[in-house]
Length: 340
Image 1 (spheres, rainbow, N blue to C red):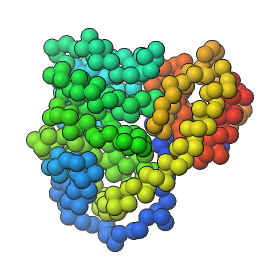
Image 2: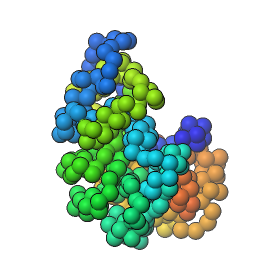
Image 3: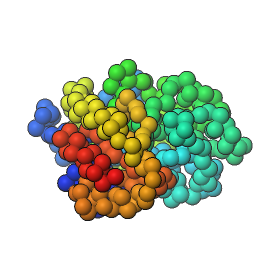
């Protein structure tokens, strides 16, 4: 996050992780108030999240974005020294949070030669009697690979609780899967309106958990945040009332960028990537040469940024993002090709 906040910006910014910001002027605004009812969740927002996911409101915990949702969920479920199985590659903030909480982190591999798919056999091989939690992202960050319900059910049947970060799942625009929380009580899910909807500024995140666990998370949140900002809660309710339109606005840009990415991958031989139908991110591998040096030149000489692969423990790779500005994205890809 420090790199993203201080070094990712460039004239041609391919280091994005979600769609472009949704402008406030395009949303019918609610009557905003500074203060609202305090307690464990703002009922209209909790209800809107519950309807969106098809769950009971008692299973919803609201919090400030998906990263904090992951932190709160992990802090509520783990004690220092607990063994956790985490996918590789993964989103760096999940790994850092586990390390901060003192978890004993073991890994299972999403292998590039298998299209970065989740292989239940890999998880079973890494599972031990001490394993307390399995963690994965769906869509996968950084590759945008989708994990099927059949695979998730197989993982959920291993007798261990499963945390799934679904912040990118709604970027499956056709036949959007239902949340994996509905697959069984062993699943805990985190998500938000950030990456797919361009509403990161209102920090509308949530956790889906069984009611007893959800209540424990609410109580732990008394130590971290106490209450959410009420104007943001009101804006979150308004966003859910127009969510389809907000998503469709971003989808037009994402689809355009995906076409440009496909054309880029087809016309050159320096970079390869797992092609996906959905999502806003793509992990590219440079076939030869120093990736860090390549990215430094890309930024200094071509005014273009991308996310270094070492943040995902993949130093021969780098991540690019779609869905912000198609003209910028197209020109950025040209500069990647020129620098390659």
